[in-house]
Image: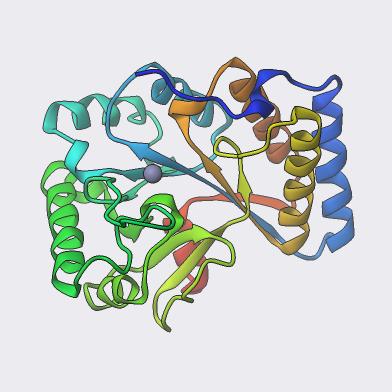
Length: 267
Ligand SMILES: [Zn+2]
């Protein structure tokens, strides 16, 4: 399958390593040494082993940075899981395998794409979430962690309530998405999108991406969304530069969802 690359990844600006380092240094200086900044990476649409997902996990393993992987249950099979699990076998504590949309399909007739939107009944939503959770638990066993990332970062209140009722610990969407999560369901908000940006001018896009990164770090939590299928050489180069800079600053604490919930629980 051919994938579309966002225009930003058609070229990389000169001195990008310096630019990233400056942004991180400035953002860290702004908030002061006393506060830790949590940095998390969420990679979506995982289930099919391949070159890009292998390269992605090798990169996170190399820098010993945790990553949360959103797995599409209907795409996962036992043999696929065996291959995926091998990729992270050396450092299993760095990976948080969690649930993405059951089949990752759009059920809306108009408006934005949603798998868990207003066109679905309560029972359909509940069934899809339970089917997804059960399939992941059967295939991945204890490696599965009950956090839900809705496809396209969108879902309705029924979905959020069902997640809470079924004992999911958290949901993860792009910052500002509505409705807000109910009390008792943590919302891990993404504030930096690397690979599904819609811009058409790479110069403006780079400006926006670096501004997003700066704002995210200054806010105290930086959540970065990754789509490995949309990564080309430039996207991998940038990610490696970013990881290099992140691990250099002591104020930045790389975490995955499981780590973040442990921090919230105070353990
Ligand atoms: Zn997705």
